[in-house]
Length: 69
Image (tube, rainbow, N blue to C red; front, side, top):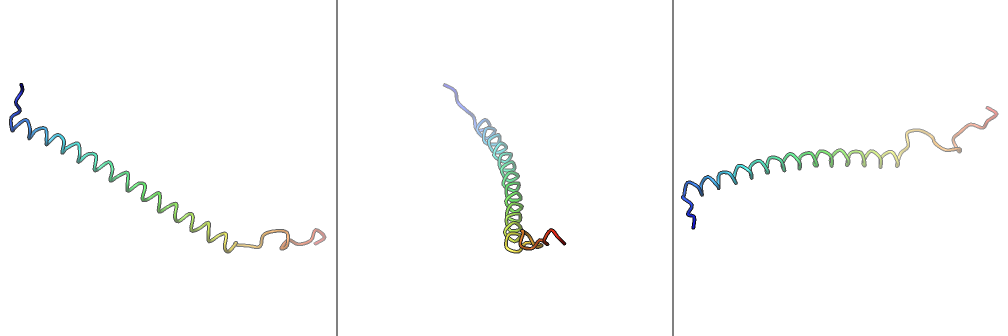
């Protein structure tokens, strides 16, 4: 039967804490990246919606000059 001393238990807890800190930093970076991508995508969707509502110039055959001009 093995007995663990208080020093061993503290060391184990410190190791676990170090891994958790690293994981939290990595997850934070990932969440920030996804947030930036989400913001960018939302801007693009907004721009696309805006361009569909009001085209910049006349489009389609109704606004073209006849071929004899």
